[in-house]
Image 1 (tube, rainbow, N blue to C red):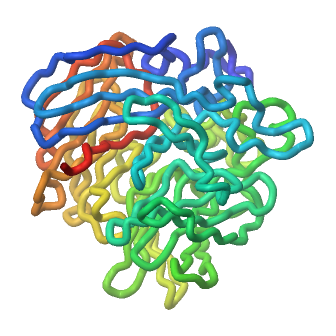
Image 2: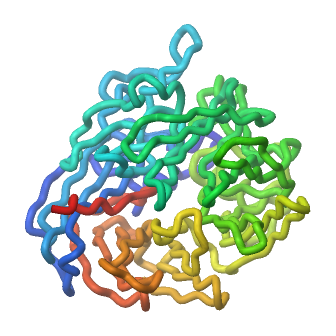
Image 3: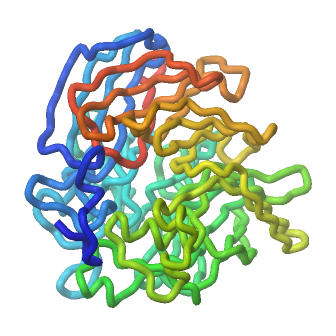
Length: 458
């Protein structure tokens, strides 16, 4: 199969990305090392997995499949994988109806899976979340009693103090951006439109104790691409500009800060420093990085920005992204930008108990390593897996009664690059040493995001 832009092959359908053809169950999984007994719960991870014979035109558009591993009392009890049975998956429902309106339940639900208020939600940014059972059966779309009228980002943020879930949705028609807030009990208690110039692919955002940070960046919706049937109708647009917005959570106008042109899929964390400045850490693509990366996963090449031909050769070949920091001063309007590490990485994670508050550590996935970044010392350490293994996002799970920020474990599904097999790797987050490995009964394709869902306290 060729990509929509005529290049070949479709890298998101081969090797460690290749979809699996079916759903399976396995019990009594083999374990090397010792699983910490307090890791009692489920690790779920979501990602696109096209049905056999129906390849997707873009990596981001295949139907969602959640892979789950059940751990209890030092044992790996089961593995199972299930497609998320959205109306798009079961009935072929179309996101754009014949009358031009949107069916927000007709989505792939393929990007993330998160728990909140007793629900487990499979997420994709273009539509409604889908509720799953702890055994990965699909309950159905969730619109919070009819109050959610549009999409829900795949990257909501749970406030560790209030228990609220903060999220947003972006639209292809006005309103282009809407902020939402769920109570700790799961009720939608606030929806607020945020004015932006037009529809962009706003994949993530950040929160602090008192603010929301918006990423209004130059990857824009293109109606011509949508009409052409492109897999993802978004492209780079130099003319749109790049800015970050700081909005008070309690209400008030957005303060916008112009930044150097870039794109950010994923924020690591954000917080307010002692001087009241807003500090945002994320993984940054320069324009030449994004325009090199986007066609490689099925997106259209850029025709208006700096072209791949003019990019540095390494960025043109890899579309690399790197950890970066923006410091925004609401008092003066000043912006400071600085690189935090020069290693190409993605999927930044942190201790969720520090969401919106100062953090010392971030964890990322490199091409063949899991990396720990110490932002206080400016150093980093890595568990090098070797050229034949590809790690997924490393989810941090704090140890019970942890006293240090990095006291806990990292969970990552690691897959053989040739597409032969996978394991759930459990690392000590303190020194990245191997604590245990659960051999999975099948290869798990490269995917996106997951969560550790502990058993409820008895």
